[in-house]
Structure formats: structure tokens, C-alpha cells
Image 1: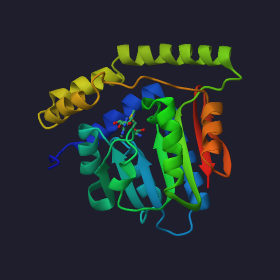
Image 2 (image 1 turned 180 degrees about the horizontal axis):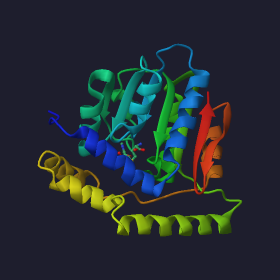
Image 3 (image 1 turned 180 degrees about the vertical axis):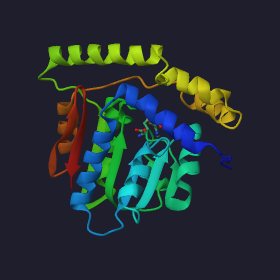
Image 4 (image 1 turned 45 degrees about the vertical axis):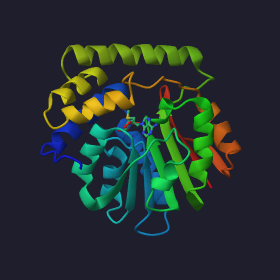
Length: 252
Ligand SMILES: C[S@@+](CC[C@H](N)C(=O)[O-])C[C@H]1O[C@@H](n2cnc3c(N)ncnc32)[C@H](O)[C@@H]1O
């Protein structure tokens, strides 16, 4: 049973600050993703899948924008899923499933979605698995539905500038961490491990993700665009870009 987390709002806030230190334009990116959903939705209650949704970042913003949306969130991390459950309550269906396994769609409450959205997550998967996942996502979309993957995706036409942009961003981030303006990824998890309710879930997480983080396979956006075309999407392109991050969109 998911434990009750009384101070979920505070954990959401510190998660957002922690993630923003890595991607200052994070909210602009979410707005662009939800604008795309708005453009293709056919009803006031679009069916949305928040893939590797963590604490519910996309789901919470989607429900603010489309209060009648039918939202499903999938993730594998017990601590983040508990925070998502505490914040979303019965406004979303929360599913624990492993995206590295091809049977993950069987855990979903629906067979068809209007949009599948994911952010800062699929770089946790290896290349061959991600290509297959793109076809599995295609199979979950209605005709005209869309998929957006926002992640670390450098522009391979700008290798030198990208290096400089990343170095500049790292300097700012280091300064913010040093000044205590926000927690780093490792500090956030240390803090969660000190919370009596989250501690057992963080311990379970260590068993699921023994290294604590992803292998950081971050191919350029062009790799994703090719893989999405190969997966059979009809329209594929870049919806948003900020330095070495981008959101690629694929319409069925
Ligand atoms: C950095 S978090 C991003 C969460 C959220 N999308 C956000 O932007 O705040 C990456 C998420 O990917 C999830 N994830 C990584 N590998 C996964 C897998 N194989 N199956 C399900 N979720 C996975 C992690 O548990 C984590 O919640």
C-alpha cells in the first residue's frame, strides 16, 4: 500500500527546483508540450499518458490546463510514485511498470491515448530498447494523436557551441548548488532518504536502480527523429529547443 505523505507539496516544490537547476527553461518546455496537446485534442477530456512521469510533473500541469483530462502516469520508482499518488490522488491512474520490458502496456487502464508525453526520462533506456519503445508508443495512440519526448538531445549541427552552452550551464548550476539555492540530484535523494515515510521507498529504489542514475545515453535530436519516422509516425519534428535539450514531436 502507498504510504500517506503529508507534505507532498513541499517535496514537489523541491523536486521542481532541483530539476530546474539542470534545465532552467523546464516550464517553457512543458507549456510547449501542452500547447501541442491542445492543438490535436478533440474533446475537453483528452486521454493522456505521462510516461516515466516521476512525481507527476507533467500530469499535474496537464490537469491544471485540462481539468477533465483522463491522465495515466507510469513510472517504476516507488518513492516518486508515492509522491505522485499523494499529489494527484484520484485525478490520475498511477501505474508501476518497467518501460524496459515490452509488456509494460498491459499494465495500462486504456489501449488508446490522445497523447503520450515524457520528459527528462527516456535517456535512461538503451538505444535498441528506445527504438522499440517508440513503436509500442505508436500502437497506443489514436490516429492523429501525438507523442512528445523532451530530453537531453543536442543539436549535432552545433557541436562546439553545445559544449560551451553545457559548460556555461554547469557553472551556473555549481554556483547555485554551492550557495544552497537548490539541491543537486544526489542531495535531493539524500534528503528523501532522511524522511521517515520516504526512507523505505528510497531503499526499494536503490534495489531497482542500483547505480542511482541512468547510463546517460543522450543521442542528438536527429537520432530520435529518424527512430520516430522508422516507428511509423507520419509527421515528425522538433517542437522545442533550449541549448542541449529538445522536445521532439511525432504525430500519428
Ligand atoms: C529525471 S526523472 C523525470 C520525471 C518527470 N518526467 C519530470 O520531468 O519531473 C526520470 C524518471 O524516469 C523514470 N524511469 C527511468 N527508467 C524507467 C523505466 N525503465 N521504467 C519506468 N520509469 C523509468 C524514473 O523512475 C524517473 O521517475
